Image (cartoon, rainbow over all chains, first blue to last red):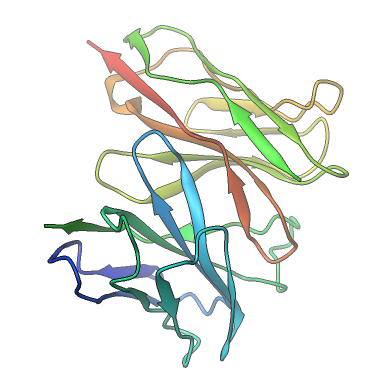
Length: 118
Length: 112
């Protein structure tokens, strides 16, 4: 079955360390996204990518970096510059410009990665 | 800019009660509208969608009608179960590629 795989599910980090969260999809989707979720605050967009080798900042990109070297993969690095990195991180993908017949561009999400800074 | 506002939670209900979660939006034109659900410890799943005004989306006993007159997309279920306990998010797209603006989420707790 096609889907999105995020790893690791849980990650602990010491202050000052960079960590990389993995996101892989086998849906043949063009667009990929990273969202951050904090309790009671909904989801906030960190970065997104519409095609390989291209990505754009979202609403809260400071302290994060991404790459999109392959269509299937969109890893997120949480750098030491991110002041409050403890959160639940969600990766998602969509068809992008190749929408479904209904015209609605649906996001498919991974199961998430929970990062805790000690 | 485009935005979504949904009612705050938590909403606590007894099993078989009627559930309504209010969602209103601000947008240019008539975008598609979505409800996503997040079960504890998991990612989000699409619950239902409506692609144009007056459409009704439905799935798993949940319904929502896209009402352009009131710019609303309220989620309803006639008889909730304990398994419906989750966080529900209303969302609308902010571009044609799939980028979504989410509401803050409404936690629903259903007790036996």
